[in-house]
Length: 358
Length: 110
Picture 1 (cartoon, each protein chain N blue to C red):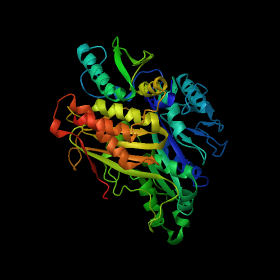
Picture 2: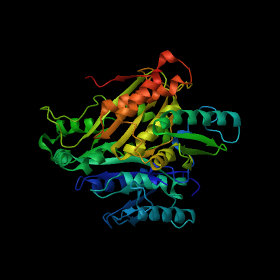
Picture 3: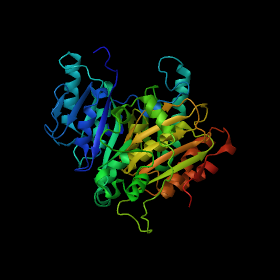
Picture 4: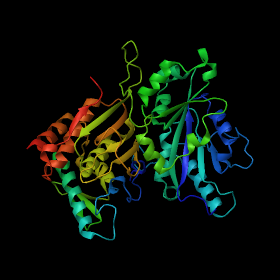
């Protein structure tokens, strides 16, 4: 128990129905690196685990009647995690250092993350780890076209695992699917599942430092091709999920940014699937990384150094049906307003550049 | 109180975590902390003015949001501010509202 971490990371394994979540989990759990992992599966008894801890969670979504429609909290998940924590503290179960939750194929991943942050007990003992989403190489494209859940799962992912590549034509993941995923979630690392990969540590070995580092990795934060969702023939996709980068020259005022982002998330939180980026904060030497999923914003992390691209703020937004240009203009207006009254660097008023070549 | 905004209990809101003096620290650098709170009040008021509301510091621990007619509410942090502002003003506080953006742009230039 002594080596149990202060905040136990809770990783979420999600993906559409039949996309290979349980297969992936089975393989991951065979890895000795995951020996100290507690597992919550919300379908009963799919994986027989002897020394692991299997809890069952029903698909109960509890809507709190306190008047805030965004407050969906999974009561049973919270109970199950609290119980696990309690039994670990009492030495009734082996000390686990991470938790993996496998959700059902239709679940919106977000309420799980919010449970960790909102529960008065859990938020002191657990923290959100990686979100791993499985995408079926054969049927994935059709699912993305048809089901909004599938899009949300892909958009929220930290890592996307493409499954069943060996079943696809030519034995490879279709390029159209890869391109589509790059559009929905440009900053997620994409792995192609094989019989023995990707390794458990690759998918679930997540720490705060890891997350900060990930923001700067070549394949990680800086999207190669942020884009609105247009198919190859120029027609709009059915889903309105799109991603874009807001880049700002000159320092951003943290207070003004805080006012703006809290206001945006309050009104449009359920449509801002992801906010992720580094900020050049006025008065700060080092970059500050921010990372948010819908209404949930992780505490900002200070990075050690600026990336090779140089100093500047870059924020990736993955949104569901929000106007990218309006959002950029709004950011500009609020950031600028935050600076002028202070009289600091009026000439360095933040100008929003449209990185997405138009 | 909205649990999904990450503000249940009202402490440790993400906007509280900046490395500026007075933001991280709670027990030392009292003056810095008060100055930082004053900056937040000023930043929020620039936006709230558009809705006929104002924010003020309350004992260095909370904020008081008030309308021009005197309706007021105590809020803990920026996460709680906007739900309260929408409730008191009866309007949607939408940063993507073109009229509000125009107003903020004019404020920034003027």
